[in-house]
Image (cartoon, rainbow, N blue to C red; front, side, top):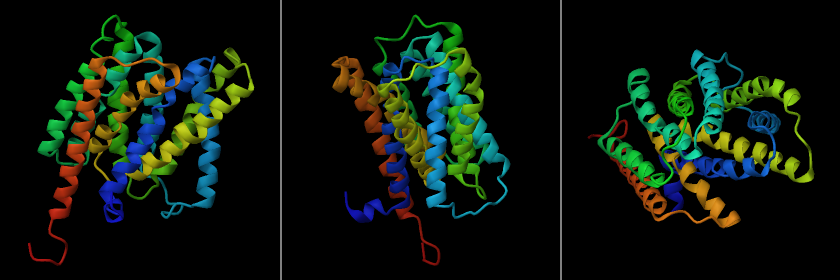
Length: 298
């Protein structure tokens, strides 16, 4: 990939969101390594993430300064925190495959909400990618679907709606800083999880401390910064399409570190999704390049 291509704002945003999804995909593996209550993990992971992001904020202060955050800032923060918690609870109440599949209906909700709230036009390649993503995820988890509890499945759908709404509200932030919105999300997660630290006190060990430190700094901290950077440069629906790399990569880490091999259906579904996202991204970038520049004759 040439340097000039990397300088393209849309490609830079696309790569940032893809990198964020890649880091997020290690979530499941490290949660398995930690023998703690899931809410306790979220709370302590967010605590480390807040420290990391505050350090980054001190080193790289936001260019917007300390302007009063708009309503979309607070909406994005609360919706993102709700997304995190509804997904965790859904995974406890239903199969993880059901939860991930239903939660990653987010591109559909992002497209619909983006259409209504910020008038983002849905292009033909994005409609096609939405269909292929849903089809690919269905193939990917074909052998795992079924057997989930109704309430867990319903919460997973709600998590997808909340995630799609989060991306739209982040796009709506004009005078605030998206990094600070995600920082606020982690503060909310800490506040919600604090009581669980006393109900389910975590057992500390070298491995558990290292795991939660990695999750806070890299898996959720750096990933959130990259996500905030990318969402300002690509559409909400394109963001959600790119983040489906997360459920695809999850079993890859399990294969590499635990020796569990994905099924043939999972491989086919993954290739369909990746092809849909890449094709949609390239078509969208080409359309932006072909738009007449200001001051030029179309």
